[in-house]
Image 1 (cartoon, rainbow, N blue to C red):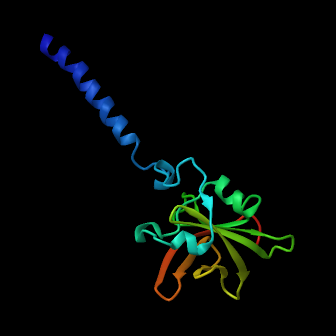
Image 2 (cartoon, rainbow, N blue to C red):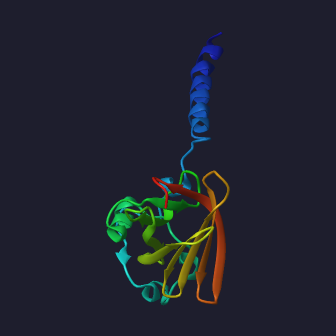
Image 3 (spheres, helix red, strand yellow):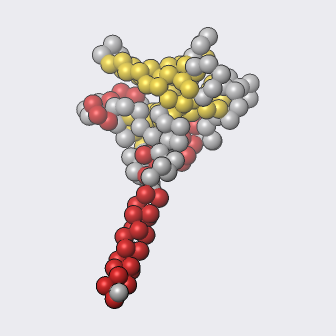
Length: 169
């Protein structure tokens, strides 16, 4: 009888440990929130050509940005933004003017912020700076969207993600 009572605390400790480990499963937190690539330091703003000069190909995907980085370029909060994941930070953002037309945009490449000229097309929002082009095309009535990222004639990559607006743009 004494042996069973000494095993009980061990069994309870194992049960608590298992419950603790399993409780972390299924959290609705994006990877970039748990392990942000941009860290807490605000990136520098540079011309498009400087951002891609001597670039590491792996760092050429548009990177997530924090509010301070977007506001540094846009001069205020972003009106609309494209996200890789439903819970993730923006990788492209724009600010609309008083007529709800896209006015300026920002993207982060190779650790640098790039101010983008932003225009509306029939089915997309287009952002350009030098040889860098982004086209964000909302899909249907929801938040789902496609983004095409190009550098000159040498690189073209498509992404599926989410496009969100605080107000139309």
